[in-house]
Image (cartoon, rainbow, N blue to C red):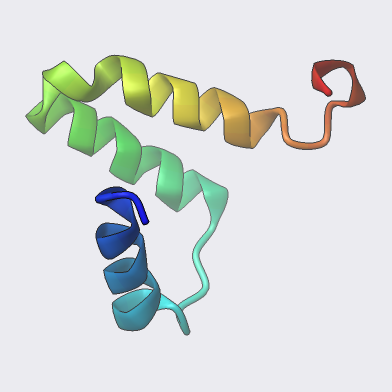
Length: 59
């Protein structure tokens, strides 16, 4: 189990029943990076990975 699993589990427990748009998620990621600029690269990688999940070329 990775350390991040605890945060993911908390997210799922606290907000798992909510429905959000990708627009909302993108805005939250922007706000997070504004408040935590050291995480710009990991957030960019996560966003790019999520955006390209359906791309067959990346497999």
